[in-house]
Image 1: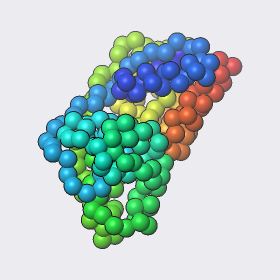
Image 2: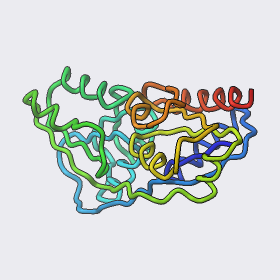
Image 3: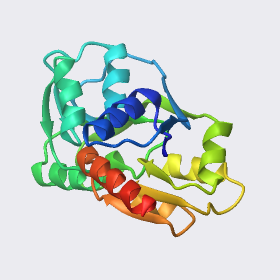
Image 4: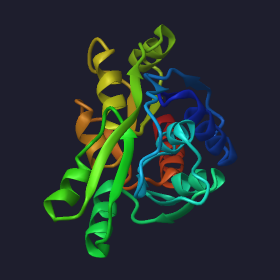
Length: 227
């Protein structure tokens, strides 16, 4: 079985990617995060920076992105921004690489539109280098309880693969379990997610925001789990 704890729209999209790769395992959805826009518009001036599709969606509720210049992490976030009418440029596959690219470019001001829970401080890093930048939370990632079906599957004797896409979802999922799972195979997106899982059954599926690599790694983990 595959257990997906991403917010439901993203989980369903990832499930489709797994099916396209020939994954025949049952897939159980149990989101541990819910994306809730915070409001508080209008959109600020400056070059907008997005590190997730959730940021693009929440920003679109604050005002039109048509014609706005934006910078993103990853092609999927860029595609979401372009679909909203923005002129999007991808700079890096993760937040660290994005920061490096903006530091090399200079300019500004930059406005990072992000969730209430973030990893690192992109705007602070830019400010320390003398670049005009600010961060603004425009959506919340509210915790949801792991379903009993998901908890039972994760703690059960049958093999289960758990792809994890954020450090917070890793921590929330682990906290919902009573003890170390006995037959669980975790695939983590990035070292920070890997480090947030408390037990040593996790492997690194992709070191950047690469959903294709995560899907490949999840399928490979399932094949290994079945022996």
